[in-house]
Image (cartoon, rainbow, N blue to C red; front, side):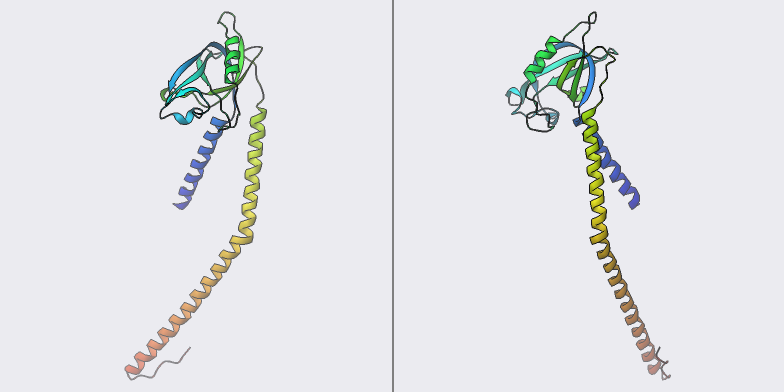
Length: 225
């Protein structure tokens, strides 16, 4: 039972880490930009999927002026990006050029008859029922819809993260071997000693009770062992 609980907690923690990395790390989409615009947007229960209020522009209470970029994927499916500064808050993209990025997007707009393909770097998720949009952080023109790019940044971050986990695990194992295991061993030996003394005391008590019973019954006491 405890093993199932432990594995369940481990899987849940791993799922949280994977989702966090998938949301935060940059991703690249090849799209054709069809429209760019600003829209007053009410930020409610989904506030965690938007930039901090002191980073956005023309914010008033829960209503904020947010830039959006509409695009179409090579397979014909549409995608909408928001274009917000991240500032110094999380995720650490240190983005302050949302106005320039909006101008780039407007300049790269194209039609289906004369497409211009663009690689949009973004983070976040598009969840229509929750009104969340991935945040575009960079874009560049590419040769065509089949253009690809190697995720160098993601590779470096994941490699460093794996090394950090490996080092932390090694440090934990060494700490447990040097500090915790000896304490547990000493505690186990002390407990065994206590059990031995308890058994000896119980044996003496049983012997004393047996001799007392024999004396009360007028029989000779059994020899001591």
